[in-house]
Image (cartoon, rainbow, N blue to C red):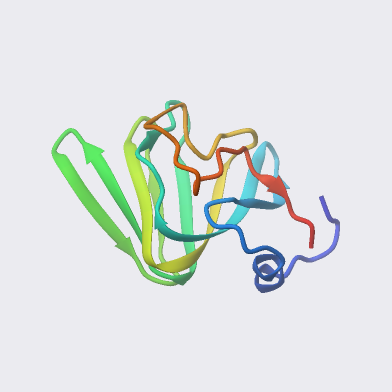
Length: 131
């Protein structure tokens, strides 16, 4: 990890892959990841950790399956949302978005339980930023 300031616009410009987060820094035992997203991710669950989202650009939708039923939250640029541990969710970005996520180091992008992983989703614990 760099001991220099990191420009998020430069970090995002350094890669094109969708649904393939880059680790820009670490805070204690947490990764700070940025990703470009468009279309749909998959339904998945992180059993033991919350997942924090900040929309840097565009709009992110997060569908949630909760005890009360299914709902979708829509996050505009600058909005934040935390998916509670154990909540099945599916992010999507119909028109594309750039997002920042904050989660424990080693957390897989497809959670602990998930549906079949399509080719456009990178099942990873994050890639080190090459910028």
